[in-house]
Amino acid sequence: MTVDKNPAYPVAIEELQTEKKLPGDVRLRQVKYLNNIVEQDHRRIKRKSRHAMGYFSYATACITIYGIEIINMIFKGQLGDVVDRTAQGLKNFIHAQFGLAEAC
Image (cartoon, rainbow, N blue to C red):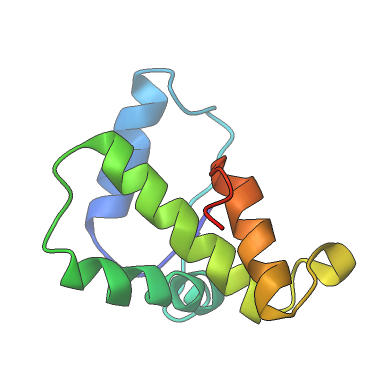
């Protein structure tokens, strides 16, 4: 497991292994900046959720984060040919993802 140099990680990993919630053969690798790709990938979620001033329920957080991720995946081109990139195509895709009925 690759993490940054936060001193809380070794303690947490050891505790999880003691409680048998994490396999004993998991090795911790603390290297500053090595996990930067993962950190940068969720920066959009952090930026958007900051404006929400916290979530009042787990369900609200899940739905909001799912929506942010869908939009990011569309604009990063990670969905390939699945999405028609016209405005109508994007609207239809989002409606299908969230189970929304057609409004117009």
